[in-house]
Length: 101
Length: 469
Image (cartoon, rainbow over the protein chains, first blue to last red):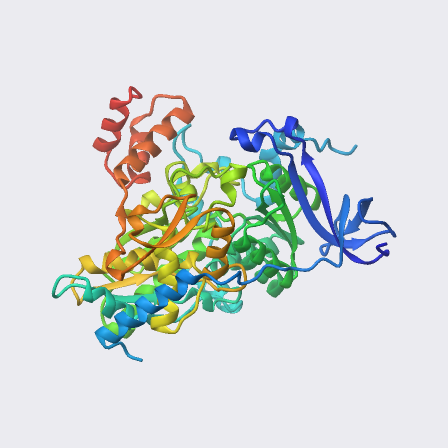
C-alpha cells in the first residue's frame, strides 16, 4: 500500500495502437504509445490503481500506480572482454611509439 | 471551457501553442513559400556574440579548456605517411555545468524565457540537452520539464537515455518518458499548452546563437596558445546545432578553417522503429538525426530551425559505432580523460582525418561529454550484447548497424567515410521546393544556394534534373 505523499512512478497509455495515425514503421504501429512520470501521490492507493500525483513542477498527472519509491538501477553493465583486448592493443601501441606514460 | 486534449485537437493547435511557447512569430521572417530571412531570424532576438558570452559567463557556461591530445596525435602519426598527422586538440565541453556543450544553448534559451516572464521551460530531448536545460533552469530559478523517448514497447530503456533522465531529475526537473514514436510531440505540446511554459527548443535562434561562442573560443584559444588559426574543425552532427553554431563562431572570429561534420553511421536502422530502437548502441550523434536534419531542417519543434548545417559544412564524414567506442577507450587510456562515447564521434573521425593533414596543421575537435553509469562504453557495449548485437575486434568496415559493433583490432583501421555532401545538398533543394509546391523565383534560387553553400548554377541544375524548374 502506497501512502499519500509517497514519491511514486505512474504509467499511462497516451495513444492506443489503433489510435496512432502518424507515419510509423509496421512494428511501431502495433504498439501503444506509453508514458511514465513521477510525483507525490495525492491519496493512499495500491499498486495497479488509477491515481493522481503532483509532479516536482506542481503539475497534476493521472496514471496507473506502478512503483512506490522508484529508484534507478542502470549500471556500468557486465564485463565486456573485448574492451580488455582493446586496452591491451592500445597499451602495446603506446609502448612502441614511446607514449608519455 | 476546457480545450479538447485529444491527439487531433492538440496537433491542430500546434502553430498557436508553439507561437505562445516561443514568444516569437516566425511569419515575419518568411519571404516566399520557399525562402525566409535566416540572418533576420538570427539577429531578431538580439543575441550578439558579446551578449551570449555575457549570459553564459554569468551562469558558469563556456570558456572550457582546449586540450592537446598529444599521445593520440603521436599514434595517428604512426599510421600517417611521413610528415603527416595534424596536431589534435579537444575542446573539453564536459567542463560545462551539466557536462556538455548543450549548456551553451540552454543558458541562452532559459535566460530568454526568464526575460520574457515564463515560469518554466520545457524541452523534448533524449540527449544531453535535457540535463543542460534542467541545470540552467536550476541556476536561473525556473521550473523545468523534459520529455524524452526512452523505452521500447517492452519497457526496456536505452541505458544512455535512462542515465540522462536520472541526471535531469538530479537537477530538479520533471522527466516525462515515452515509448518510441514521433507522437512524443503530441505529449510535449499538450503539456506545453497546459503549463504555459517556454519551449526551450534546440532549434531556436537563441539556442543556436549560444553555440557561436564555442567556435569563437576555439579560434581565440588557438591564436593564444599556438599563435595560429586551426586548419580544420570537426563537429559531431546530429540535429545540426553544433555544426551550425561552431562554424558561425569560427567565421565570426575571421577564421576560414575547414568545417567537417561527423556522424555515427547508423544507416539501415529506422529511427521510429520499436524493434530497432534498442539495436542502436549510440543514441545520438548519428546519421538517423544527422541526415534528415541536414537535408530538411524545418521538421523540428519550431517552424524554422536555426540549425542549418549545410549552410556551413565543407565536408560530411561518417564513422562507425565500434570506432567511437574504441576512441573513448583511447582517450581514457592514452590521454587520461574519461568521457562519454557519443561525444567522441568527432574525435574518432579526427584521428583518421588528421592523417590527411601535414604535421604542422591544427585540427580541433569541438566537444567532449560527461560519462556515467549507462552512458559509458562498458554498459553500452553490454547492452548491445543483451540485444543480440555481435561485439568483436576486427575491421570496422565490416560493422553492420543493428547487427554488429566492430572495435578496430588496430588503430590503423580507423577510417572515416566521406559522405556525398552534394547528394545531401541536392536533397535539401528538392525537398524545399517540393514542400512549397511552387516554382522557385530568382531570389528563391539564391536562397537555396546559400542554404547549401553552393551557387545558383548548382541549384538550377539540381531542379532541372528533377523536373522542378
